Amino acid sequence: MALLEVRDLTVTFYTAEGVVTAVDDLSYSIEAGEKFGVVGESGAGKSVTALSLLRLIESPGRIESGEILLDGDDLLEMTETEIQEVRGNRVAMIFQDAQTALNPVYTVGDQISEAIRHHLDHTDEEARERAIELLDRVGIPDAEARYSDYPHEFSGGMQQRAVIAMALSCDPDLLVADEPTTALDVTTEAKILAELEDLAEEFDTAVQLITHDLGVVADLCDRVMVMYAGKSVERASAEDLFYDPKHPYTVGLMSSIPRIGDDRDRLQTIPGSMPDLISTPTGCSFHPRCPYAEEACRRTEPALTEPETGKPATVGSERSARCLEYTGELNGGLDYDVTVRDDAAAPTEGSQ
Amino acid sequence: MRRIYESDAVERDRSDPFRPGDAEEGVEPQAARSITSSAWSKRLLPHWLRHRVVTVDVTAERTHVGPAESVPFTVTFTNRLPIPVSVEVRSPLLWTWSVDGHVEASRVPVHDPPDGTAYLNLDRGERRRFRREWSGLFRISDREWDRADRGEHTLRVAVNVADPDGKGLADETTITVE
Image (tube, rainbow over all chains, first blue to last red; front, side, top):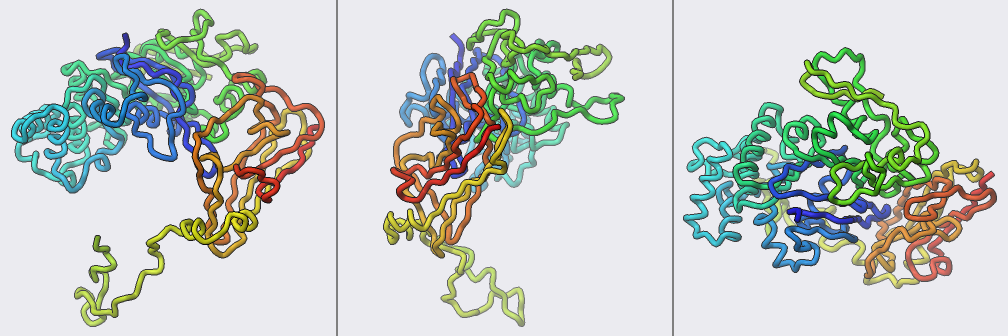
């Protein structure tokens, strides 16, 4: 059994403007100890998916339907007391902006030890010792002295490390990292990601890493899900996704990565922008931006399909993509090549 | 809780700008409200009056379009009173648009809003505008859309209350597919 299984999750927000379907019929699974990447542009529904896992969606948002099974237990059926036992304990979260995630009026050490005291029934002294140990483990120098510092006395990178320490404090089975390095410079980002990888392996924690940086995914993840307009458009192992992308959106994302030594005059981008989730386009949500779109794409919503067999994908499918090409409904086909350059730092290039 | 404007910390004396001044107290800041404006509407205005002062208008950018051509349209809710108004609606889905009676031009249900009332809040004299687009297609199943037939189609917008037409909380326009 998978550690986490999300089935047909739909999350909506009822606003004055209309109903925003932020996550639409989403299914995926994460195995114990696996590093699972979720990528997509801003507004694709990545963060809402993460918040749903811990039932942290606030009004006017609502989990409309679906199941979130953690070791077979449906988190959506749990009482508030039961879900509180899961939060920070079995499933922990690293939020986007560490500065906002930390409470400015409590010391960093207190905030880490609070979770330990609450979930692990440690005494104050034991919790303090464990918090110091964790601060040291995530690379905060002179952890004992830093235990009593307030968040504003930490640099951005240190704050992020403190948040990681907090998330790891109860040895969770699953760590949901929502763009943990977005606010950091690239050198600190590299260090934090390496740290996260080491810690996940050391603690045997599964990681759901949400990012819009495909480089981070390539570096860290075993499997990847690409999201667009609240739906999963492709799911594959990281290697398959980079060497053999199956969805035009994934190809577009990859060809828009800038590379050193690239001789293109202009950076290739995906034309247009993410649709308004109140009124998503008919048929395939990506069709207005897709260079291979045909009339069928406007009229038929593609199902998540196994590209090799053309059969409907299940949660357990190794590979899946949401494009009419794989159900034989696209006449012109997908006309792109993937070139693998051995000498380049980045392994693939999609050309459209 | 003591507020910053009650602390005198932001007042300055003309002779010594760094010393808290002794300006007359008791002047309440105009912007701070201790009760939400819509709460007054809920308590003081009868429902029939709230329905009468709110108007709904739908305007299509084009009224004659080709087959499967998109029709952008604008929905405007206006509060004609100089005080805020809250209209009680039947679910968190405050209003809907439909074509020929099909909500969001779909022949299959698209939304399943939870039970419970909600409010369409409009500030004093507020005109709130939303832009939408009808693709010129009808959704015929969960995965399929079909072209609208040639001829006239009614694009209608209604606030989610019982009998919106009778309460003047609906409007419609005709789109001709040529």
